[in-house]
Structure formats: structure tokens, C-alpha cells
Image 1 (spheres, rainbow, N blue to C red):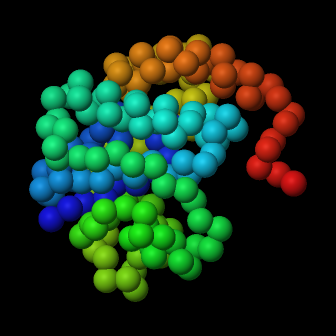
Image 2 (image 1 turned 45 degrees about the vertical axis):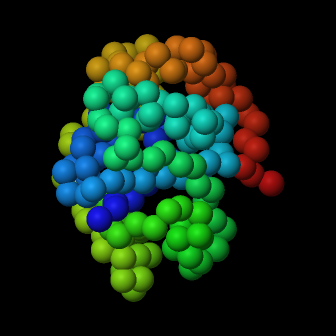
Length: 176
């Protein structure tokens, strides 16, 4: 059985790692889909798809998770939500089950025949990407909330300065 784990991973954190470990306990292999791959350098999506994929792959390798049991791929968000599942099925290898704690995702997949497993959420209050990004720009201790590999990637791309610059800017390329 193959599972699908989806998320923006802005950045990838220890809660995401727990979700992947849970999925791997129940599945032969998993697809980790980096959603919103077309968005980057904006308030909610400061990191590129490539940077997020690097964060995830480096974190999984660092955790001694067998690289034959997962693949990390980017997928774009779709403007037509009704056809979203069709897009996922076309853009990704086949999958049998989706791991998601997002009620909206569960609703969208409810009539599709795809099983949705609500994962055990680990410290959702603390382990959420918005809080972690806020901690990063406020110079609060955020490093313990993400795998060490994520810290290295963020340092290598000067990610904290990027976040600070984005938050100061009045430019928002997502508005018309």
C-alpha cells in the first residue's frame, strides 16, 4: 500500500516528520507531495519548492529512513478545486491512502473512494509552520522545532533574512 502525505512544508518541521513516520508504519512506501510548488518568496510561502524538497529529503536521510520507501515531489495548487484529485492522480504516482488532518482535504476526497487517514497530531499549537516562521523573524528559539537538516538549508539560503525582507515589503505578487 502506498500513502500520500501532502503539505506546504513552509518549513518542514518535527510535526511533519512525525506524520511521515506514522505513514511509513502503515504503508510500504509514501509520496511526500510539496503542494503550492508555484508559490515562493511571499509571506505564507517564503521558500521555493526546490528548497522545501531539499529540506525534506535531507531530513529523511538524516533520520535514517530508507530512501526506497519515499519519494518527494512538487505539485502546483489548482484553481479548480473540483478537479484537484484528478490533477493529483495525473501528476503523482498511484496512491491508496491520503494522510491529512485537514478537514477541507478530507471533504474534497470523501466521494472519491480514496481513504483518508487523520493522523495523530503532535503538538499542533507549537509545531505549525506559521508559528515557526514568526519565531524565526523574532529571533526566538525555533531550531528545536525542525530537523537539523532544515536549519542547515535555511542557513544556506539566508532564509531568516529573506523572511524579514518579505514581511517588511508592501509588495504582494499574489494580489492583482
